[in-house]
Image 1 (tube, helix red, strand yellow):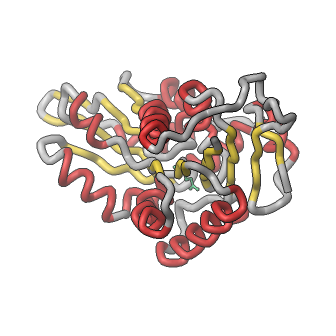
Image 2 (cartoon, protein in one colour):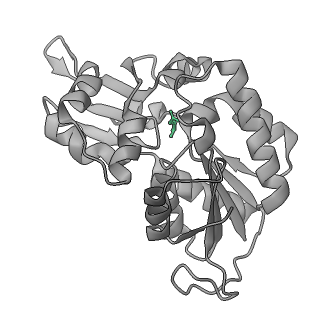
Length: 268
Ligand code: DGL
């Protein structure tokens, strides 16, 4: 059973690690559209064309049983279109506004995302549908995805910049304070230690990775796709490792090292 995990870059690895925990026997093809990274500032129409092309080609080549769009910026744009084009299940990653609205005690939550995701109608619809009794603040960051990539590949994180980027997430109203920040970009869970260091007060940083992996498992079970491979670390019984592909065809050595730490062998 093959699962295609897609992101603009390395952020989807935060979803991949949960998929491994929940579906340890699956074969993974991880696709990073690094040639177009970051997606956050792209023009919406051009980005839709780009993502549909890249994913369509990847599906033709890898013939996955299921696709996980491990990217909020992409899911809020093309999830429905992909579902209508292909006869395989897609699991999207969209801002976890519904669970945050259910879990908040203060009724003040923030959604930390790329600038693209906070602008999307899809995100506004989630708020209208699931959080109309909660004050939701949308916070778009232009640099956190890049900071996360730099951090993942061995770079220093400038905590002052991180502090400035997350500061708008923290607000008070009638004596209450934000108690949940939704991590609505798959890169951000890799920065939660830094977020905690500079946050003005403790909050719950909501990462949707585990529910996404569980949803993938449910959909595969519904389609009765059986997992027949044998778990033997990242090298499968057929001698092949899980695969990572980069649309640049030329990922930096630090990215190659990183994904191999996640059990992925880079294929060009
Ligand atoms: N990881 C992506 C997301 O979940 C996007 C980061 C970017 O390319 O700007 O939104």
